[in-house]
Image (tube, rainbow, N blue to C red):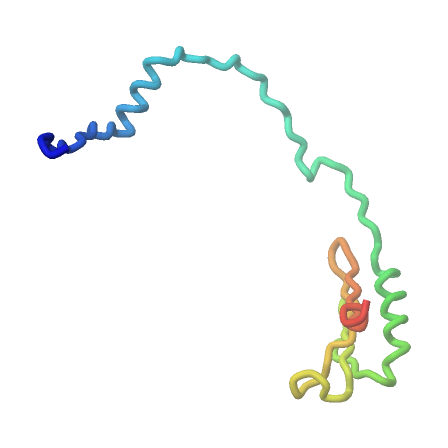
Length: 119
């Protein structure tokens, strides 16, 4: 329609976060939580821990790997670590990891690369 003027829409100024929070506090009644009794947490040091001896497990797994020493090269033969690699340069101009047995504080780890390659 040709006779009407176009009018701009006016927008209300945005209220600040502080104003919104103040309005919420006024409209909501204050809620107080009843005092709860603190629960006693048991510390790990107070629990009885079974300290298994993993040395026999380490020795048994090391013996399984040691049967392949003639085809492989021993990198580490330590009281807590046994590590084998291939004799040939088969991975990026170097020997390929074959397997390892390691004794930790609470575990014995056994890594055998052929299982990772062909499960």
